[in-house]
Image (cartoon, rainbow, N blue to C red; front, side, top):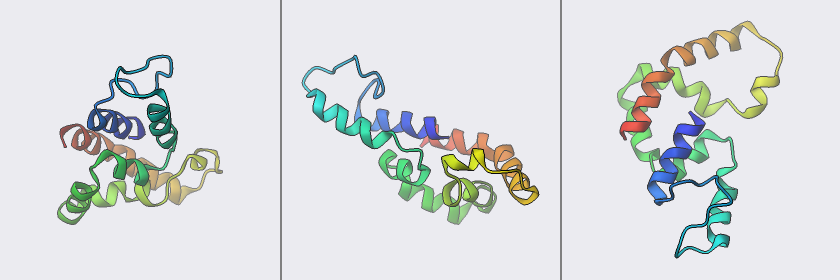
Length: 113
């Protein structure tokens, strides 16, 4: 999901490859691209959703599609990169499985939005 959002950000900004630091775009200073790159080094999905320009559409989506809202709320509200290192917990495990089972629909939504 993180990479899908980052790809959407690149598309929105018109930058073909935000992460290739050896590739500079004509007409844009390296410092400008480096600054954007520094913001994109986050793993925070809510921040990436804002930068992607999809936040307003996301807010509409969660209001109108309860299944989608329930399945991705864990990712948007509670998940961060430290989650992958926490000890297993049956409740958390069930939530992750539920989220993963419905993630494909959300990834398609990101691509098509």
